[in-house]
Image 1: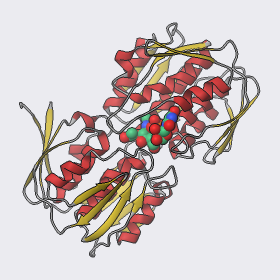
Image 2: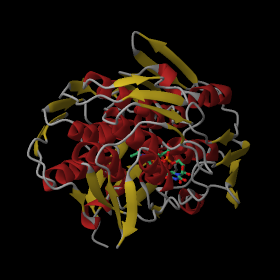
Image 3: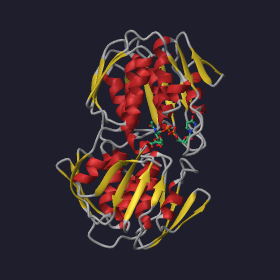
Length: 422
Ligand code: EPU
């Protein structure tokens, strides 16, 4: 296992390219299975979750050619629509094969993804969705077994205790493309990644309206064809660099970013006093003054994203004053709290809220994170901490941040990756 060593205190300066969005690319790759024809997906980030996805596609018999940021998928020979536990257990995103496999093959067998360090991750909405389209679903021996000779479109409400669901919306939308008749998904997720998936499906010949709104309409078609498509930039990766610039009193320009997709995050950072402007398709983030604490509540898009909650908390740790960070998507997603406190932060947890007493300085320490975004928060804290910070279990970061070390180094950070022999 590798670890990152960060010497804190360097101001970040320069330009960084935003990679393609992991959470768009995952369902888009699965969607390619809706057609027998070849699809070519570009701007795919080179991260571990994508490598796992490629393995899954190959395990089902697809021919996949993955070179740099392009993935070519030919699923014409797929005869085995089964996702085993071994494959699914390493990446929950693989549940997004349920809809495409069911729609194309009339059946799907997908291992139940189970719990997760960021809290319970149920799939009841995925199951409700495909059942509403007429699938028979049984849960047996840890697998979801779904069958339907012909899916049938209908109106359904896809909301749970925590609101809309990104991947359940993706699954139902994908399944509905080949269903008979019209499907209306009420309380659909509005995240840009769902819009991106929808745009790819439209390029494949799907008839979809209402993308980006809570009511998505899909008119089923007989078949879809292959398509070439480029994935949108990763707003969560971008947001992480925006926060890095703000924390280090930096001046960082992000290439390939539409400011609008940052939603509430942009508003909150501007409220805190971070200077953010867009010019010619690039976004420049500067911090010239003392920041103010801001309170944040995570919500479905366009609310503040849960995937940036940990990074925002790292920022608030060094902004003098009190801020409250409330998690309304994954109420238990606070693994970073104890590790940030180990670095001298002052955070108290009260239910699904973290009360952060901002300080002038953090101090470098040996820390360990147990999920992707928590790890990113610890790296950000390390960039400003006094002395050296070691972040272990780097494989979490490898799942979702392309070339993190190289990108931070190019901005002037003192960060290296080493083998961890402990
Ligand atoms: N939920 C249910 N039932 C379901 C599905 C979800 O109750 O059947 C609940 C969840 O427990 C959660 C809420 O609904 O409380 C929203 O979860 P959602 O289904 O939207 O999450 P997801 O689709 O499984 C994607 C991202 C996550 C991101 C969430 C929320 C991918 C591959 N994953 O997960 O990304 O946190 O949306 O925006 O797209 C990450 O990248 O680090 C990550 C965890």
